[in-house]
Length: 162
Image (cartoon, rainbow, N blue to C red; front, side):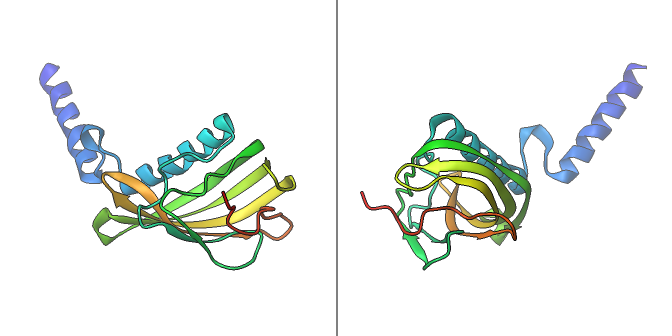
């Protein structure tokens, strides 16, 4: 029986190896999905954007409020909130450039109140984000949010000045 169980265990490890998830390694898709979920949880807990999430080269973003293209520095946006109850759902990720670039598409919904801006009670947007791998971490390089029909975009309309 020990040989059979050992053979079954070896077979299971080989199957996992073929999917790229053996020995604790996760796929690009799983890694980026986790970055998105962790970032969302961080904002809910701390009521501010997580630091060190943007590429050192910055990012370009279209926000769901409409308006012009926003250029974000490598230090990120640093938004702060009075309340934040939004969730990222149905996250799909495409790995590109040998696993060094990833495009994530998902829905973000809920409510929040950015400091200095009106509350958004029915936030419902489609999100596309481009991530790049820098120093072993996934960083945002571009983002586009667009409201779903019947939902609201953010109340922010331009990069906040410090």
